Image (cartoon, rainbow, N blue to C red; front, side):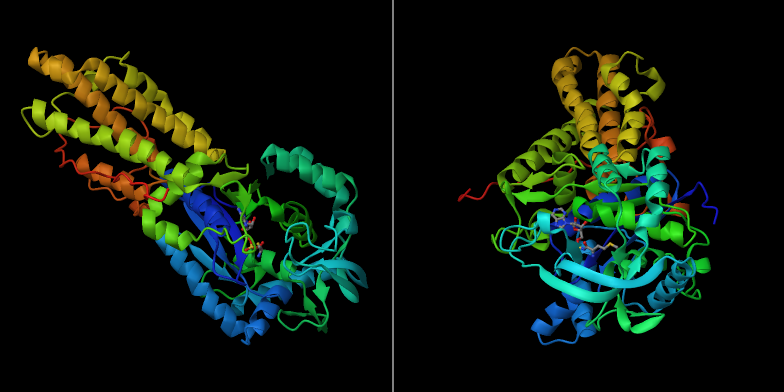
Length: 530
Ligand code: MSP
C-alpha cells in the first residue's frame, strides 16, 4: 500500500460511450496527458488511466434506440476513443472499460467490504431522475417543464422504487474533517468552496442500485437489482491498476500504486469525485486520493456546445486540419484551467500563428540561419560559461525552469505557456536590439557569439519546457539543434532529456553540431469566408 515517491497515478473520467468522443472529452484527456508527460520527465513512474463507462440506462437506451445489443454497441464506439487519443498524441498507460471481465470481480469485492461495514441498506427512492446525467435531481433545480438543468432538452423521469442505498450521511464529519486537513484536495478553490457548501447543507444517503435495468452488474447480495452505474464506474479506476495477468482482487489492484495522485474531471461530475467517491473509499477502508481537479466547460463562439444548437466541435476534424500540437496548445494556452473557455476558429488561428509560427518558429529559424551565416563552423564557438551573468536572456532563463515547474504542478497550463512565450518574445526583441548583422559587419565577433548562443539556448529551453504540450514541435526544434531526442519517447528508463538536466539555461554545448533550419510550424491561412 505504500506508494513510492516515484509513482504518479492520474485519471481522466471514464467517458460514456453513448456517442463518439466530443471536444470536452478531448480537453480533459489532453490536460491529463500533459501532466503525465511532465511527471515522466521529472523521473516519475506514471500511470495515466483513461477509459470508458459503458453500463447504465443511458447506454442501454441509446443501444436499444439503434436496435443494437448494448455490448456490441459499446464495442463499436470504444475504438473511436482509442483512435482520437492516438490522433491527439495521448500516451495513456491503461484503458479501463467497465465491461472488462476483471472489473466485475473488483466491484463485487468492493461492494462486499462496504456491505460488511454496514453501509448499504434497502430503502425507497422517490424523485426525479435524469438519464443523461444518470443522477437524481432536486425538484428546485429543474427547468420549467421538468427539464434537466444540464441537459436542457431532456425531461427528467419520476421514480418511486426500492433501491439499495449507500450511507453517505454517516461520513459527513469525516469528509468535512478531511477537506479541512487537506486544503489542496479539491481544486481550484472555487470548486472546493462549492463542495464544502454542499456538504455543509447535510449529506443524504444515495441509492446505488436500480430495478428494471439489465445493463450493469447485479447487486451481489440481491441480483434482482442492478448496481448504479456510478458505483461501478468509479471503481473502473481501481480495476485499471491491475497488472494484466493479475488475479482481479483489491489487494492486487492497490499493491503498487495507491492512492491516486490526481483525478482530472469536468465541473459537472465534481460531487461524484469529491464527495461520493471518498466516502465510498473510507467505507471500504482505503486511503483517499490526493487531489481532484474540476476544470471548466468549453463553449463555441460564446455559446454552450450541444447537438441541439448544432454547434459541436468535432475533435477529429480539428486535429486532422491543424495537427495535434496546435489543438493541444490552443486549449491549454488560451483557457485558464479550472475556468470555462471558448473556442473560436479565428482566434484559434491567430494564437497559433502568433505564438508557434511567428514567435517560436521564426526565432529558431532566424537564430540557426545566423549561426550558419556568421560562424566559421556549423556550431557555436562559445562555451556557456562565457555568457555574462547579466545577459538578459540568461537572467530570464535561469529562473524559468523552476517557475514553469510550479505552474505545471498546479495545473496552470496557461501560465506555463505564457512564461515560456515571454522568453521567446524577449529573445526576438534581443536579436533586434543587438543587431547581430551589424556586429558581424563591425567584426565584433566575441559579442556576436554571445548573442547567437543566448538566443539559441533560449529557443532550446523554450522547446524543452513546452515539450509536454507540443511534443512534436519540441522534438523538431531539438533535432535542428543537433539533439537526437524525441519527446514522444520519454518513458522511465528511456528518459533522454530529464528535467533536472534540461530545464536549466546554459546546457547547449559548443561541441554540438547544429542541424538545418526548417519551419517547425507552418502559418495557417484564414479561409476566405472567414
Ligand atoms: N461517465 C461519466 C464519468 C465517470 S468517471 C468514473 C461521465 N462521462 S461523460 O462522457 O459524460 O463526461 C466526461 C467528461 O467530459 C466530464 O468530465 C465532463 O465534465 C466533460 N465534458 C462534457 N462536456 C464538456 C464541455 N463542453 N466542456 C468541457 N468538458 C465537458 O460524466
